[in-house]
Every structure is written in structure tokens, then in C-alpha cells.
Image 1 (cartoon, rainbow, N blue to C red):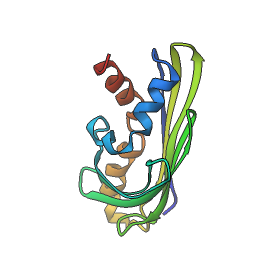
Image 2: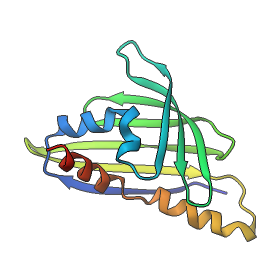
Image 3: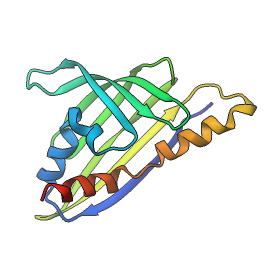
Image 4: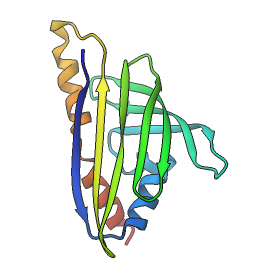
Length: 149
């Protein structure tokens, strides 16, 4: 199967630095991203940031486990790249943040997953994965930031 991909965007009434602090705090992401159940840091860089993590995502019908490598381009881009998984053939995604002024930021979350071969009768799995990909992470970011006002 090919990649299932999507993105979501929100314009947030928060400065880019505050949005970046939330997005870059990988270990706390499961607290506000509803489909991300857990993050276990495997490796850190010299600055102490998580750069290799094992993640568990809730795809409704099953848990999806993926090891990812994270790249940081503060404060504008955080990307994660597939390292390995028994559940997916590939996955890429991340956050793009754009300052629209001192107190406004456009946050775009994008994700692409390749679940591997899906037999014709396994279309429910594809339907379960699609909402995960086309999620509401940008809106969840806004809710998390609002909760911390």
C-alpha cells in the first residue's frame, strides 16, 4: 500500500516560542495528543533533547508501535522519521510553526504512514488509520496551550 497522508492547521493566539516549547517537549506529548499513548526516550542529543523514541499510538483497532528519529529546527520545525516498526512499513511527520506576529502562530501538523500491504478484506484497518493521520493535533496543541494560560 502507499502512504496515507494528511495535515491539519490552526492559527493560535500564542507566540511561536510558547508553541515551540509545547511541541518540542516530546516526553509530555501523550498528555495532550489523544492518539499518542506513550513515548519512551531511547537516545538524547548533547542538549538533552529526545532524538530517538519508541512511541505507541492508538489506531482504534490496535496499538501501533514505531521507533522514530526526531530532528529539531527551533523554533520552526520538528520532524520525526521512521526508524523501525513491526506495525508499519514507513512513517514521516512533524510540526511546522510560523510566527504571524508577536502573539500569533500558524501551527501545521503533518503525518504520512504506510501501513504495508492491506488485503481487500482489511479495509477497516485503513479506515481506522485514516483518522489517526487526518487527526486534530493542531487543535489539540491549542487546547494544551490554553489550559496552561
